[in-house]
Image (cartoon, rainbow, N blue to C red; front, side):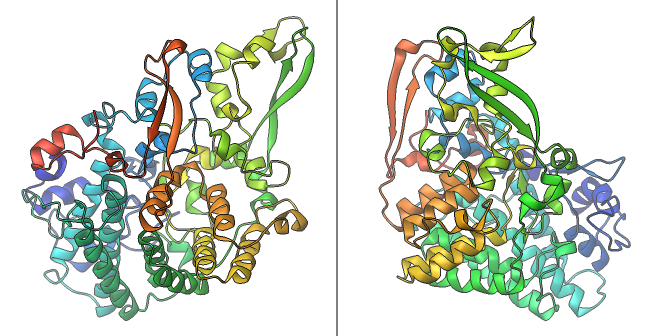
Length: 541
């Protein structure tokens, strides 16, 4: 286990660390009493109940000790974003636009492990995930030893802790393990013994324990009466939360019958889709206009940059209030978050009518990163422009990356994801008509008009997968390629042109990552692998 966790020898250490989190949870997200939570030792169920209601378990990475407010979000799973085929750092844009900057992102983009194996990057996923697993285990260990209140509270706390433990183990499994059940897993840490290091076991072993925890979580939450979705306290899992997550796990494993059953049940409890184009906080404001010049220096096109300033000002609060979420878990953009999208992803969009494209890719963040190197200013007219020469170094897709929620990506399950899981399972069972209807239900809230939402919808498997990529974005593409190659033998390769010398355009080469490449399991941090005695995942240099 990582250094932070190994040093937590006694239970009062973690309570000292978390006391301010429990006491200071801001009223916007936690309005339940946390009596006795400030004590140095765990002795009362109110403390465990308060700990399970802490807003940093999913939404925030940490809590400000003075204000009691969440001060930042985590960067879960962000390490894999530069690796997917939905992003592209083309050589010209990287050299001329970014001046070969962002070196750590580029190393990951080239599927090199140097950055991914350093301890500095443990803060993205590894450390916060294991810390949360340790907290859930602490709650479960003391569940029957503390002063009790009611059976319902006991069962609710048990269900919430079991769900959280399964949720974060699955996050580790999808990032650090290959897909096949007989491949090395991530173990399953089921106790709060700080010095104990779990064996890796197999993927199948870890999955078995995830499913078992979810079964027990659903049973406990049912006994506690937590069977309906609770929008105001969605940071506290309910039975529909468990069902939505089980649908995600089952889809990853290719168990489409189980995925369909759970997605359907989750949608019965909560099926709200946000028609964001009609929401006032999503209003787009144009704030920059950049002319594109031809060889004679005359404007032939214009790039308009827009932003959702009100939504950005809300920061992570916007995520907490987003009605589609079963669980408000979010990932800060982190490593590679501003990578431009790829050509294939760019060409997947109806850029005139898809509101997701219009609203979420309008801020041109990659272009702004390269602004000082590509954009010039006419001092007489104060007009910004890109010369013909610089424009030749750009591709249209170099300008765009995801920008909703200030670039944060949703990790928690949403109703949109459940509709997509339902549609994919229907399509795979041959019910393309039902799949098409399910897709249309989603698309009516995603397109600017009804006709555009209905256009071209067939309900085929590929139709659903294309819609899933548009909805889930580049962030989830690594996850999807891994599951499709594993469950469906899809044969998806990642191919990209890279530079062996990041500052020299003459060192171009083509990188090809095959479906059976061992690097689909990200590397462990060198220090952690050595301390735990785990063999490093293969293929990384």
